[in-house]
Image (cartoon, rainbow, N blue to C red; front, side, top):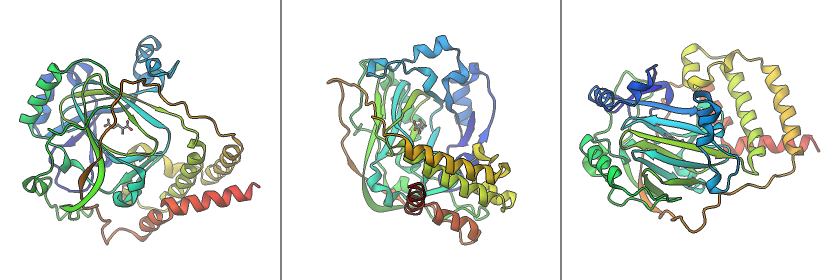
Length: 368
Ligand SMILES: O=C(O)CCC(=O)C(=O)O
């Protein structure tokens, strides 16, 4: 599990390296008394991104079936589980592979989504490097409410809400929007933290989608859509990423970025590695670069050879609602500090989408 701060002393996104990992028994994770204790201490707790097959046996995995949405045979073996207290959240990012189906099982979660066409406003970065995640430098926590009073009313709303399943939800217009007071109350400056930069809200409005998922809702997230996700209450959800025809090309792009990250990590100090690599990638600096390069070339041959497969879209019948776009005020992006090492800056430049796509094209040409 990860624990983070409800009111951290910084304004940049609370990426994994700014959280602590901890172990706690199921009885505590599921106990309202413990949730309150953590919240009273100013902490959130998140048992996130866990493959169900790594936690439960096959019989239980079968119970998380997606076949009602036309995805025959897909169940908990291909799904991940997210259990967390109010305020637990995942910073804004784009997944490189697949489309996503998210089923809300308990409590409520706010999703803020942006079309990939809005990427230029979202300041994509590959730092911290994590395979298949492109992070935004924008911290969206100021757009969701983490006020305990609101949480209690959310919980009442959840208990009263109908259990009828919807495949997507309407945006909840009663959800608090950003207020001028709130804009400046999230986080405080911490002059000792080299990564702190001004993160006050701008009046820049960008078209996005905001939805509060309630138990029984299933959200369809199209491939590559940006998303920031935050628990309004103690919440449990399950998701599955479904492979898309475009994923084989994305695999080459990911392999090229990974190769660059590994080459760079080999030359960095441990502090710089901490900034570059997400904790779940911290073994990247010990891998054999030549082997990784060989694998990238091999992968590229196979991927380009692959005939494009059809994407299997979910079958939702008539029981779905489209989300409505709304203008969302974007906070300022986190700016890399001037002291950041040039190597990291160059990694960022060399791993941006246009550069990686040009490199992938070169690879493609080399196999023809
Ligand atoms: O539920 C969350 O906190 C994040 C989920 C997510 O990022 C995803 O399903 O892709």
